[in-house]
Image 1: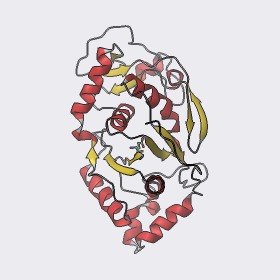
Image 2 (image 1 turned 120 degrees about the vertical axis):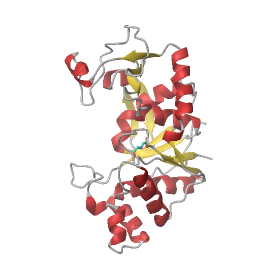
Image 3 (image 1 turned 135 degrees about the vertical axis):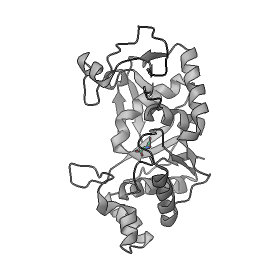
Image 4 (image 1 turned 180 degrees about the vertical axis):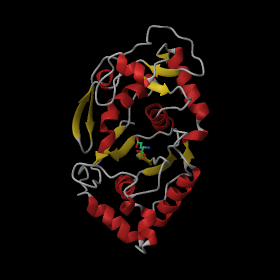
Length: 275
Ligand code: GLU
């Protein structure tokens, strides 16, 4: 039986892009006889808001998406992240970093997503509250087969350099929290939008460093675009589920609109997970 998850960040209301993702998640789980976990990804304490979380949960229930376990919230999982960090630290894989974004640019950090050039990796700085923590990535290529996007090759050490585990404000990062959670919760199939495809190689490497022998399988699906070039953003009011509800649209029409918004390719064969 597969375990997959729906993992919204409570930094805005639910929109049609989330509904597309929910359809992939729940339809795949139903077809494969798997279960769906619901995880509130509020690792960013500055941007997450309880009223968004409440609104997301309410809209999901209205649309009829029911998870197979009570929702978990990342902000309740600090002990789990601390323990995972402890394991990496014990293995000598992490170091404290005092670089600001400006420092990284000045040191030649480059690339679409600003590659960290490793400035602090051999400084042996003490871990103090105002310093970030990074994990050393191996300088190797990660190859994996995405269930929709096909064969992929990524070299995370070239894409992003050593990954942030915790930033200097004390926030666990998305990459770290999501990888620890997927491992800890036994998620063996990750279904999400294509905008996160580039993060997958690093999450596979990190999951191995955390001790996971079989990383999850991944399925990255098309995004809903507001124009052909631009993916839908949370501020695109017309696609907000709140607005559609207020305009009197019934839930089945919202789901139908999400179905129509992408052409919905699904893998045709039975999914083999690694676990
Ligand atoms: N929390 C992320 C988001 O809302 C999704 C994370 C993931 O699926 O890995 O975009």
